[in-house]
Length: 212
Image (tube, rainbow, N blue to C red; front, side, top):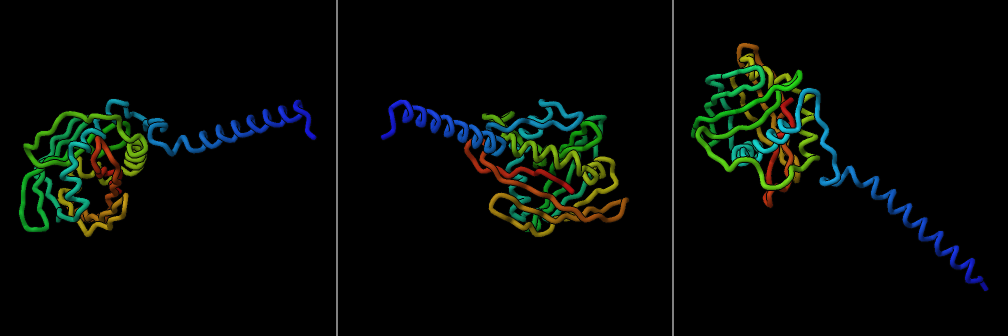
């Protein structure tokens, strides 16, 4: 028969072991949970700019959704207004049904990279910002991908390319890749736009995370 003292020691040891195991699991899973993720800012990017980029994409939900759904055939850059930190591109957008309309693309420069902020119809108005905290995992992916792959975005800003033809999207459950062809004075370049889907403010939302 096991004495009460030994039985108590065994029980205490088992509880300690379970607690250590639970802590280990929590530490492993923490980076995978949106709320526990830490914002990772590339050089030159402030928290305010990162949140603005995310909010602009929330506001661009309709146009990004059209891109992901294969309803945009391409666009031409009609005019570019560039400052030391921003670029505003006036666009003529052609839809796959033949309709054309005007649009605006906004880019932001921070550090050595250009970042995609938004694309929307000209004159579109939205409620400012977003109601809840951003999905930090999506935002980190957006920042990391674009900080390392900003050449094509920069070449839209500087006029090297002034037209983009959009191919057929390859759509998955939570991500979509879209082949694109850039043309202009700089010749022709093939690229890929990648978008991911998350829930933001209670609705499904596609985010453009990379131009490469």
